[in-house]
Length: 272
Length: 272
Image (cartoon, rainbow over all chains, first blue to last red; front, top):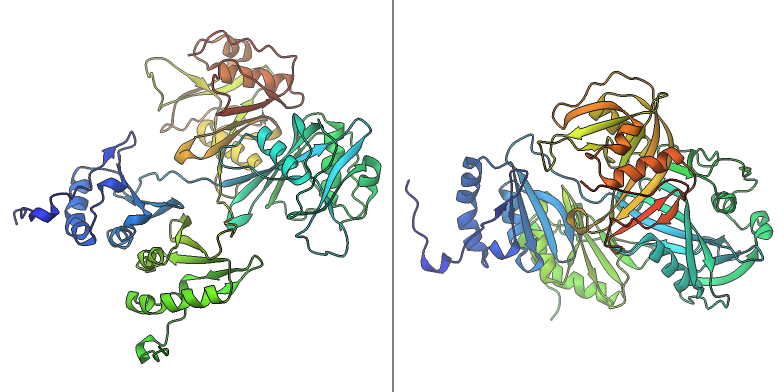
């Protein structure tokens, strides 16, 4: 059957894209017709053409305002690849061996070991914790913002939670962990920071309490996780990073630690 | 107007969810009606009920097979949160200050500095490179698979590309870079590995050439990136990690490096 000329309201239809270096075709939201009926009229012939052209993979970026295109694309064999708040990216592999690159796999968080010249450690007691009748002393820190440097992110989190300005010294421990939020993995980067100010102004929403605690008191406290104790010991000892087994983390498939090598005591006595 | 009793074919409709610790409601794919008309009949009253209940955030997980639910949800104010190949997660904030947790922000790749006892370095010349008339010697490596340990991932990549079995020694350099694939950030982790086998069996698809190159020859080669040269120098010197400025990376907002501190020579003479 010959192609039927499109009626005039459909002349705006495109579904055109540009090819990339991997024999893929990338289609932006602007190339999606404004009406679902136009898209559905166009999609099958375009799919046939793309197959005929020998393309390996079609990328279709659907903006929120054109979400009607998603079911139509799924009917043509598209699957989801990734999304941001305002779009979903779909892919359709036209050849079985087409390589579909993965999307981001990790979160990155950072904690700060902030020691003053009198060997006092900056610690926080979070408001949202399991047992609110007892304190649970942690290092200040949090997730990096998108595009944020580790150095900037850890200083920002420490400042937000405690009011303390710091200088970044070094990365001392990298903790790799799997099956974190949404099933993704995470790196927790422990950094040595030098305090530039000393007056605490804590974040009242997130933090119940914040103080400069003598290092020896922190390491001996029953209200501290074994992991935090060894982090701080490692950050104080401060040589290179080596893969390290922590006997109190029983599932080696889920966690991976890189610590400065001995000497620093790895003798957790209490796990809160 | 009183609620009209639902006709019998609609009795399967649920759109029920379970509340979480953050005053959110999580709705799974099974709770989405099988027919679009049922969903559209139900959605407005459910939205009103959720608002009345004082919920902060609604999570809606739409499987591929029910993608008709996406435009209907977008009409109710939902936006995309993240997706995997077989589902899209949407969110709708019912109170303006509702905190919507971010999705994964990073890729993690790893490269191996594999040195034998005669100070020869395992290097590869990738097939997909800019100028194919000249070699471009790199460290073997690649992206971690989802859920894969760094130690396992770097050994797997080295084995796949070169056929060499290795033992993991330590993480020596962490390179943080922004605006990588899909606008996300990446960490490239450089690891010291000890070879356990020596006969090269290269991956013919990805790798043009692979060899054991004397370390001095590698460091002096014009077919090596300045960054790779300093990585190898740092991995050989091998002390702690500190934030380091690389003068041949002109955009400090985009890159962040953690290297062992001096002494190791930071004198890149040629940038290929």
